[in-house]
Amino acid sequence: MSSFNKILEASAKHPPAEGVKYQYGTAGFRMKADVLDSVVFRCGLVASLRSRSLGGKTIGVMITASHNPPVDNGVKLVDPTGEMLIASWEAYATEMANAKTDQELVELYKALAAKNRIDLSTPTHVVFARDTRASGSRLAACLNDALVACEAGITDYKILTTPQLHYIVRCINTKGTDEEYGEPTEKGYYEKLSSAFKLAMKNKKSSGALTVDCANGVGGPKLLELIKYLPPKDESLDIKVVNDNVHNPDSLNVECGADFVKTSQRAPPSSKAGPIDRCCSLDGDADRIVYYFTDKRGVFHLLDGDRIAALAAAFLADLSRQSGLADILKIGVVQTAYANGASTKYIEKDLRLAVRCTPTGVKYLHHEATNFDIGVYFEANGHGTVIFSDYARKNIASHEPKSPAQQDALEILQALTQLINQAVGDALSDMLLVEVVLAHKGWGPEEWLGIYNDLPNRLVRVVVTDRNVFVAEDAERRLVTPKGAQPAIDEAVKKVRQGRSFARASGTEDAVRVYAEAETRAEADDLANKVAAIVKQYG
Ligand code: NG1
Ligand code: ZN
Image (cartoon, rainbow, N blue to C red; front, side, top):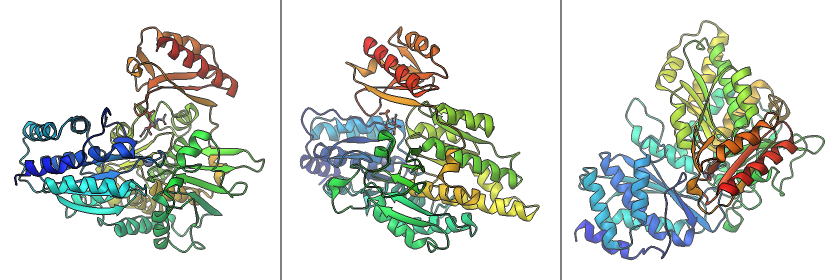
C-alpha cells in the first residue's frame, strides 16, 4: 500500500469533531480532550514532515494542556534545538488540523511536501511524551497511528514534563557535535541538573525547607525522581513535595499549582506551610514556577516570574563582575508588558541592566534574549529561563581566573550554564537556580521580597464581540485599532500616579485582557475598570 493510502486509511479512524475550528496558538492546540483525537493524529503528520524537511532531524511532540482543567488536553511541537515550533509551521499545523475530509488532508500533506521540497523517502524521527492527564494515553495512540502511517522513526518517552521532552529533543539533535547537550534520557536530565546543582551550590546549605506544590501533575513524580540524584537534604536542600497525587487525574491543577497561586494571589488551601516558610508551585506540565510565602502577620506574598528574573539577573551580574567578565558579557532581561513596573525599574536603575519588552508568548521572549550574551527572560506568570550565547559559554569556559575569588565565581557561572535549561522555561531547573541564588546570598523569602516593592496592579478579562478588532503595536502596549481607544486609555492613565495600563486581545482565549498598575491599590483598580469600560465601548 502506498504511504498516502496508509495515511488515508489511518486518518479515517480519527475523524475531526464537527463544527470545531482549530488554531495552533501560543501554546499549541489546547481544548477539551474529546475533540482532539484528529488534531493529535494530524500533528503526527506535521511532525514527520517537519523532521523530513530538516533532513531527518528529530522533532518532538508533547501532549499536555499545562495549567488547564483536567478535562482539557493539548498538543505542541518541539523544533530540533528544543525550542518551540517556528511560526510558519504553526500555520501548516492549523491548516492540517482544519482539513474537512481524509482526502483533503492527504492533498494538503502532499502540497506541503511539494511546497517545502520535502523528499518523502528521507528517514524521519519523532519523539513524544505526555503529562499525567487521563486522556493522554488515548491521544498518544492517535499520534502513534499517524507516525506509523507515514513511516516515521518513533520513540515514545511515555510520561515526561514538557521541559524534559524539550531537553531530550535538543540532546538527540546535538549528539556527537560540539554543542552536545547531554544524554537523551530522563536519567541524563536528572544527572545533568543534579551535578550542575552540586557545583553551583559550592557546599552551601539552604536554610529551612522548601515546600513544592506540584499541581497534582507530572512535576510530582519527576521531582521525587530528581531528589534521588540531589545531595542528602541535611547537606544541601530540603525539599517537601506536596500535591503530587497523579493517581487522581481529576485533582490536576485544582486549587493548586502555579496558575492558581498567581491568579488568585493566595497559597493553595491545602498548604500547611508556616510563617516565612519558602514555598513554590509548579504548573501541570512543570514549565512554570512561582514562589511565595506568608509573613509573620499572616500576609501572603507572591514572588512571581518578574522576581525570579530580577533575582537571577542580579546574581548573574554579580558573578560576571566577580569573575572578571563584566566588560565582555552583555547581560539583559526580557519581559512582557505584564511585568510589574517596579521590577523593570529595579533592573534598569538598581542593577543597571538592559530591559527589553516583547509581545506575550515565550517564543518572542526567547528570541529577544538571544541578542544578549546572558539573556534572562520570564513572563510574570513564571515561565522563563536564562540563555547563554556561544560566545558567553566559550568565554566562561576559557577565562583564566586571576584570584581564588575569580575562580569561585567562574565555577559557579560555569555550573549555571549547565543547570539552566537552554531550550525552554523549566520549573525544576528554575527552582534549583533560585535555591542556588538564595543559598549564596544567605537570603530567605523576606530578603528576596525586599529588593523592590511591587506596584499594585489588576488584570481584567473583558469579553467583546470580536477581539480581532483590537490590534496592538509596540510590544502590545498600544492599540492601533479600534481608532480612538488608545487616546482614551492615555487620558485615563494620565490622571493616576505611576499609572500604566494597556489592553490587548488574548492569544489563548476569546477575550481582551486589560492590565493596570498605579501607586495605590485603589488607583490601580479604578484605572483597570476605566480601561475595561473603554474596551467595552469600542468592542
Ligand atoms: P494570553 O491569553 O495571550 O494573554 C496567556 C498568558 C501568557 C502565556 C499564554 C500561554 C497572561 C496575561 N497571559 O496568554 O503569559 O502564558 O497564556 O502560553 O498571563
Ligand atoms: Zn505549562
